[in-house]
Length: 387
Image 1: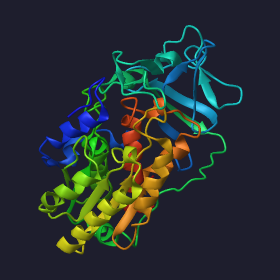
Image 2: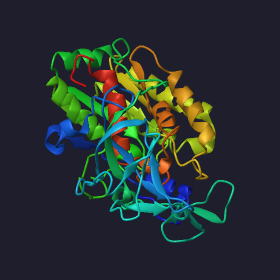
Image 3: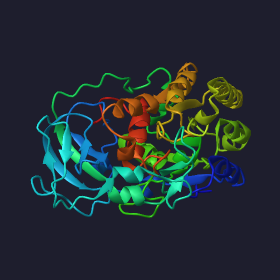
Image 4: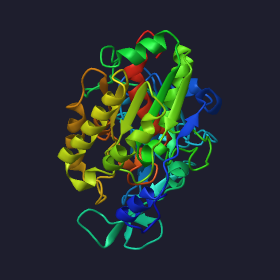
């Protein structure tokens, strides 16, 4: 069930448990358009042009609206709305700061913006959720439709001296050998996914029915694998909003009935609030054991979650590394980590949560779903592919 403004996280979780987890059996090549334009075989950790990096201009108390880019920009090539409907002109709609770190809006810009004061609202206000960490009387800005998508823009630019000093995903030749071999031989591959609302597709523009209706990351992964390898890829997406790793364990027998070649396990966002990475690790370890017992040839990708809004009470920023480490400790033959947490934390060193959020608190926007897909695909597609 979707989150509703003003409802507690617990209620959302309980409602999610009442939803029957139906498998979404996708024909990836039939549902994803413009794969080349999404650059799914390149990530923000790769050298070269940065394509369609998401930002949201925030106007501060000083009256200046600006965004900071992931890298200093040598040249800005394009700026446009996230829905693809409008493009903007340098000098008229935006300016590049002297130090090349940021974009700034002149007074008559046509680029949408948000006032920084609107990020927090009195408890119970429209378009708000829960409360700010340490302040029960103040709620955080929240919308589970396309409010943030409508305000965000995408920037394509040539970075100046880009440096990525964080973990970067690479081909998991040994750990995912069976799946990679199947793809190399153009054999059919069945993927089953167990996860929460992020993996169900929340706040991708296809989910909110907003242009350009980009699918969420699971469909992007399956479609790009088909396009890159020529294999027939079938995706069974069992993700359910509100689920945590405990529900993943309970539902696993149903998931395994589709006899997957590859299982993607993507939990953490609904677990971190419990501040119990040991139980989280135990749940995932139980899933891995039962997958092995059902078929020892099944590969598994563990996806560590994006980080949530650091100002929201339900997503304590200090817990995300511990949950990432819990998953990393389970890597081994047949099990690889797609380390989205480290990628996200690196991006947040320069960017703001508001730049990449889909709902204000714990879901990615279209750009974020592309980053998820890029991190997973890097484990499966050889570097010889055009990236």
